Image (tube, rainbow, N blue to C red; front, side):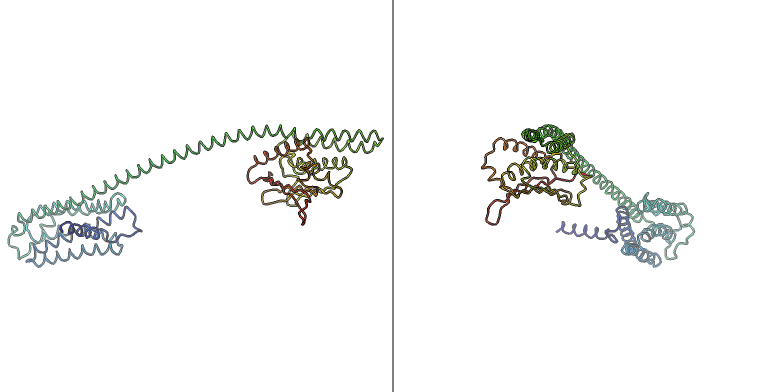
Length: 451
């Protein structure tokens, strides 16, 4: 029962202290409002008790009632968010009461009231604090002025006719009561400051703890980033080494020794047949191809225009070697700037070679090789399509030597495409007629644009 009563009193006190607070009030002003509400309640209670002490003296009793009303208005001012008015009421009222009431009840100096007046100097210090130093200084000067002029003013206020002797209201009881009131005021201020310090220390401790936790998290993140950086650096080193190895491997795979041997045989054949014009044309195309391949092999990437030029030379030589057994077309999307856009060097040649040697060479007639470059939102889709005999039929011919070479070249390109990442890939599609019979092969190579 007692605990419930204490809880209800504590709740009531908290509710009174929180009058006028809302979410928009800043932390510093919030503390001042709480303290002004408590000072107003203290002044209300103090004058309420005094009203019973001076109930037989109408003038002082009325002053006590007026003081109660004034302190109530301070609470009301906070309720309506008139925070400056509330604090001004509290700071002005107490010194005035300490000057007027002692003069009315005594012809001499009442030192206990003077002591209470001195204690009220804490009010402007706590209600304004250093954040409003000019208001704090003004309030302190007001109370200091009242304290200095206390004797002069109280001695010049005539004692009320109804009070015959000073001892009637300057008794030990009133001295004790006034002393207790002053001590309560000091105690309230002390408790408030202690609570404020404790709250600040708690907030500081929580901030320090939070900072430590954040520092730990930051250190962990830094370690993770460092580990990721090292992993990326290691990966880049591996990629660099793989690029060098693949570059050397690609150089070996770019020009098929069998192709070169066959070209030279064809030239020899034309010479033996006294077909000098054909031999010279064949030699001219072969020299241009060799030069273009050597130029392209120096760099990891080349302009699309140069890559297509090398492919054209290569296909024309193969076409001559196989007696114009097939035709070819090379098309590039208008959105692709082939004069300024680069792709990996000699990337398409192995697949073109596959299409000719394994698809078109074995076709009876009407062979067609198509090379198409399409733009696809930051990527280039390279399509190599033939209408040859298809992969299954080509595999059945079991051209092991040629197959072994092509396998190495295409494996090299698969590794090169994998290093490009960013959505790059190679897809091989078997084409068929409506009856299911093979009608060629389509290779799609998707690579990111390197401007």
